[in-house]
Length: 226
Image 1 (cartoon, rainbow, N blue to C red):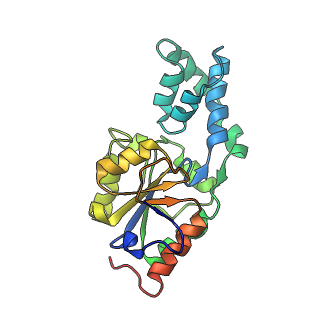
Image 2 (cartoon, rainbow, N blue to C red):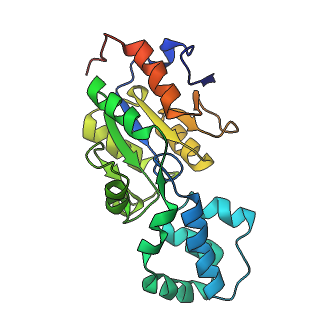
Image 3 (cartoon, rainbow, N blue to C red):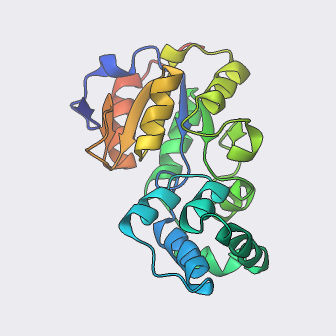
């Protein structure tokens, strides 16, 4: 385990050619938006507020799985009806881009790294990337709607590696949850944890400014070969 700073051992970056990003909690801070959304569903169904367990679950799982978790059994049909009437644009004020992420992405792209996304979101990534001014950085963008089995299954990561003809040792996956940790482990790629010291990761990132500085130190004047 290492902290992402300018004292980080450059050997931790050896052979790295691609970085995969989770969306919620990594590219963007969407916790408040998610809590308002799923809390609204429970309120409309006459259910009590989200529990701590439910908050943790809905922030890291797919849309339908999250709704099934907070509204199980016969309640799911009612909850899904609520969702169809909901205007997602009302949540936009509660979304924000993670500090330093755009500058980090610019440097990574200019240095020659491949960038991709693997997220549990289903059909909102286009809107999110446009709203957060992050369009054009990532290929491919893998959502739960594009795979047969979403995270923590490694299918999404495998599809990214295939698209870029990469081996697992050439890839790092940045995530902020145990779901992401399990995904990286299942795919055999490096796992870098963002702002969660309880996760088992090769590198722990507290700031995108810090990981950017660490990588600039390692790759200054020496771009990775592809």
